[in-house]
Image: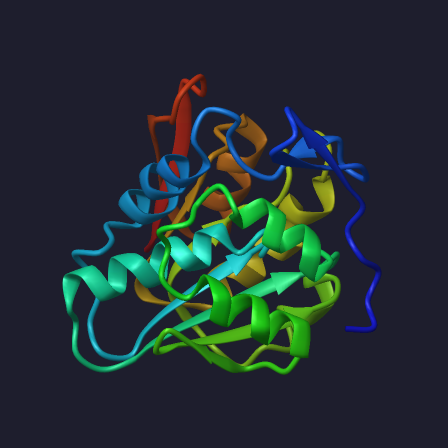
Length: 222
């Protein structure tokens, strides 16, 4: 992958932190439970899964959100296919991703994901789910994407540290690439993010956040 690679430090020897954004990739408390609470439950998943369902994500990071989605899809036993498209500007090195996922050994598709990641050939099929990775600045790659998602995981680094991934023009593109009745969820409840998403056309609500985060944000395209 000929893209600027993520520079990683490790907190407590196990949680990856972005040097560029000085922000951890997932909760120090429990990254997997955070994903399930914020992105899956926040989008009404797995209850809404159906054949042809499409999840899209800003910020692939460690791949934890993807693998948690694969697990939920498998557990619910939904027939048909699921597609997961993720936009990532600074992909992790394969060995960093492997180390980051070591803490979540029970997730199906982990080894397949790491093999696909090392090969750098996408779309790839991982544990029966289609993973389409779009590398580069989402402000350029999302407008060029022809797809529309039923559910969005907005998982860029904190808005105060990574404002580019939360700017109004990009949130408008998220809305433009959302299927009718589609949803979004994000860990942040920053007021300016909620206002930007509402202006883009989403019906926005605050919900209790995970762990130490008091609130998170969910929305439905109106």
